[in-house]
Amino acid sequence: MSYKKIKDTIDAIKAKVAAFGELTIEQKKKINYKFRLEWNFNSNSMEGNTLTIEETRSVMVGNLTVNDKPLKDVLEMQGHDKVISEILKIGKGDLRLSEKRIKEIHSGIMHEENPEQKNKIGQWKEQANEIINSKGEKYLFVAPEEVPDKIHALLNKTNASIDAIKANKKNAPHPIDVALEFHLEYLDIHPFYDGNGRTARILTNLILISLGYNPFWINEKDRTIYYNYISDIQGYGGSKELFFEYCAGLIERSEQLVLKAIQDIDIEEEDDLHKEISLLKRQLEGENFTKSPKNIYDVFQFISTDVWQPLSTILINFDDLFSESNTKLFINDKNEEYLFTSNVLTNLGSNLGSIIKTSLGELYKDYKPRELTIFGHDLYKTDFQKIVWLHSKYGLKKTKNNSPYEIVFSITFESTKYTLNLSINHLEIWKNSFAYNEFPHKGNIEKLKKDLGKSLIESIKNDIQ
Image (cartoon, rainbow, N blue to C red; front, side, top):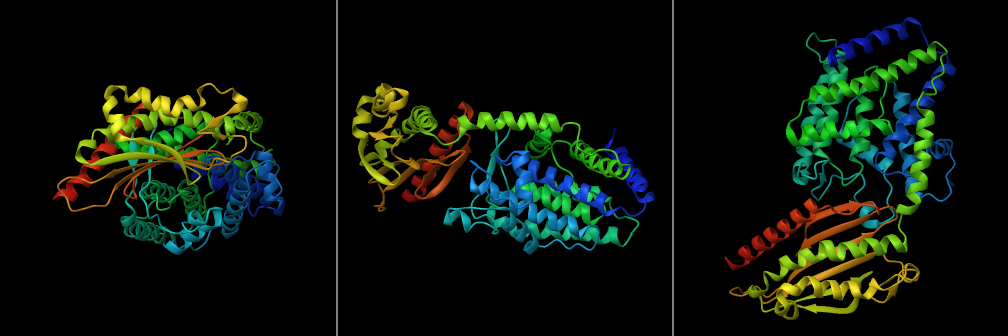
């Protein structure tokens, strides 16, 4: 069915609902609860929240003691439910989108324990953000300095369309067009450090609700379709029509749900059993993929040999331009007594790979699983939070700049993911997070090597000019 036909179907369903007259209090409660449950669960689980559907229900009724789940997940679910509950109460009525409202929504749904991360909540991003799409290619969102102007322009356009609809102007766009156009443009801006998907879905549904339509959500089985459509539009200029057709189908599902409730048809969805089974499966599988000594060990083993080693080969190519180079390792910000000097690595030349592998790998290769150790630290006794490789180069030739070049590569271990970060002289050039059962693929590593080389060349050129 075409996008236009789906919109016509939605409007026909709305007319049927209106013909029944005012909904009863019980019907409103049933519909409101169903929307809250699906919206809370699906939107948050898309962003990695570990709460099951039953735990989501528990949080929605005020229980904050969900066992064995990160407090961050519980608090973010509670905040999300509070925000969308307020939106559902607003219903059809006046709406003016503003920067203040967007930031308030972001503040309402995000929770961070780390003070540095906490300061980013409700503020436009200060660092560039990106995604690696399904084809392994990088897509950069709008640069931080462009966010205020881009958001301002988007809000002006969206509010003007809403005003035209409310005024019943002849050339007014369809409300669903306005909501979905906003959704795509907002995602392309990606204005916050995190939580952009959730805020995009909240704001899109806020537009729909204020214009008399019901909110939509994306089920677990549909997420790949949703992400692939967006990736195709952002990265390759794909058809918006297909994405709009897909989302309109989700809105139609919500409208049908209301019609069923009015007709006293059970609105516990047909796929609830599938949802419960898949959630239980994910929950059980997830036990293997949270922060644990074994997973930290596996991540370090892969990253040290398959990521840091190739980066080291790039760094050694620059050694002849400097007087001296060395690499130090830090664990939890404490300097360890492991120093790899450039003259040793350079003299061994083609044997670099085996040397690094020996230096980094021999320390743990013979340990049994119950004796996992990294650089003499027992993983069952030390809480590994961060591992940092600091590569310093001194004495750049033909320049008066005596400051060392510092290349920092790090692994930060979090509860459900680990994050890799690469910077040159405190300027971040790459950052990405992975689940504990995921590793950077070859394409990512090759691109990272190129980015490191190009960035270092640019820095050196600037200093010798």
